[in-house]
Amino acid sequence: MPEARERPSGSKVAGRQGIAARRAPDDVDRRLINALQGDFPLVERPFAQVADAVGLSEEALIARLQSLLDDRVLTRFGPMFQIERMGGAFCLAAMAVPEARWGEVVEAVNAFTEVAHNYRREHALNMWFVLATETPGGIADCAARMEAATGLPVHLFPKEREYFVEMKLEA
Amino acid sequence: MSDPIDFAVGGAGVPSGKLGDVQAAADLDRRLVLATQGGLALVARPYALLAEQLGTSEALVRERLAVMLADGRIRRIGAVPNHYAIGYPANGMSVWDIDDECIDAVGERVGGLPFVTHCYRRPRHLPDWPYNLFAMVHAATREAALERVGEIAAAIERDFPGVCRSRDVLFSAGILKKTGLRIGA
Image 1 (cartoon, rainbow over the protein chains, first blue to last red):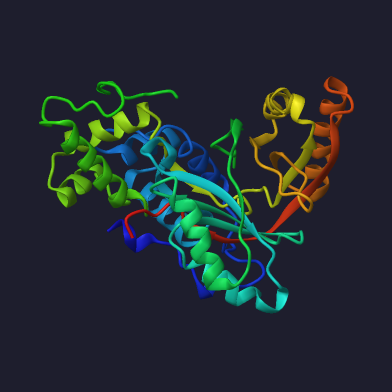
Image 2 (image 1 turned 180 degrees about the vertical axis):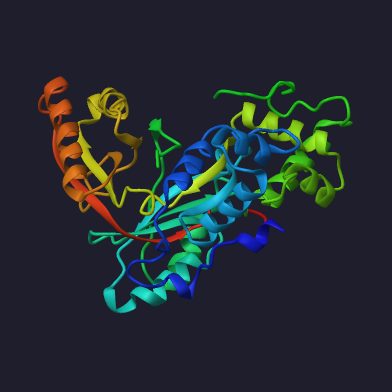
């Protein structure tokens, strides 16, 4: 089942550094990561097709991909959805979290399923995250519930215009 | 978006012959989102497994995924790297206070720089947050990231002198969560 590969979240990621990878990718990993940031084939045996291209067997490729996910070199493998094209919304949001409350607030914020990703940043606004909701109205609703849960203001930075988005990073 | 699929069908949300109506297609598409938002199963035939889970055919699963790729509901299918792990530990969100008169021209210019991975216009939150342009840079070191921010500043000043009033760079100090979207909870 796909859900079995979910990365742990919540209390385990409440530290300063958050989710860190457990190993560095080797050359084969990098080749594989680069190949898997392209168009994944929609054929009966897609891993076999990618395996041919990178010179691995299908089984070896699947095992390696699993280990890259287990070791958090990859955070996810699958379709990346653009929820705005499905009637929903994404919104960047930020909070100024007092250091004394950091762990507790990370846990409270990450517990919202609407939080797609969350980063600590060096600024008075020290927590920056992206909300994804099924309806445009869901953003304000989620922010209000988050403010109630944490007692802290949530600042919303909705995208007014997108100039460029790159979906790949060469490994 | 490039589309390697030779059996991609129709336009956005247009069901093909096997599906009776638009509602059935929308319903299957939503169930596909729910079934794959946590990730695609790492098995030899992931689409066959999905079809089994959803009670439909593998051909239809692949067809609907192709439609969603073609109309942009899926940006791509593939791996999402932890950028710290693959050589880009310095993740700087550069933010800029640009004169509203030319924000879009500046945004297009900055978004066109090869090392800028995301570039958006967003609202200011005055008085504490005067910035209306966000440009993300990834690099191996902070110095390299700051050098790139300097290149952005130089490009803006050269092409649009005087329009940038202030800027800042917010470096990431850790990923706290990175699951991607989760709907239907």
